[in-house]
Image (tube, rainbow, N blue to C red; front, side):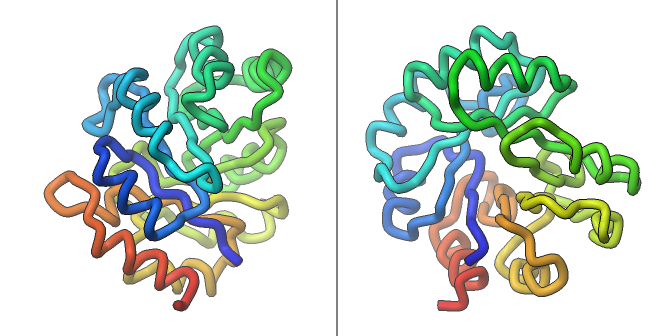
Length: 200
């Protein structure tokens, strides 16, 4: 069964929705320039309301490794997702410091990008078009370059989730803007996305 990650949650009603819909993962964005940025305090509060079976992921871009480790050690997040220029040493050090899983995101613009993602020491990789701009990338670039399990991201929504699974059979789908209306998470779209993936 394809895993589902709903990223960019910011409100208590978002948590109420996911507790009902039951994706596998949810994401909090800790990059201050993002419109979906959430404070550590708010994330901690929302995590306390989240069902234990749903894993929380923290999204960071070139954040100080000590700060990321602190989020993991305090239990605000279960997994760190790195979207910046974090190198292999950063990933290995973070894993060693915390014993927690790390997802590394890669922007796929060429086949070389896909090959680089395949070799990452991260526990999981995420293949994306950009930085949350709601666009898909050329899925054919993944081809045979990526044999390990991966999250597919970029431009996914209830209308194309099924096609993505059929075309690529990814380990998981990561969605954010595709389940929003006017910049906020939309429970109807969230429900529709889960139905499209799980074919309920």
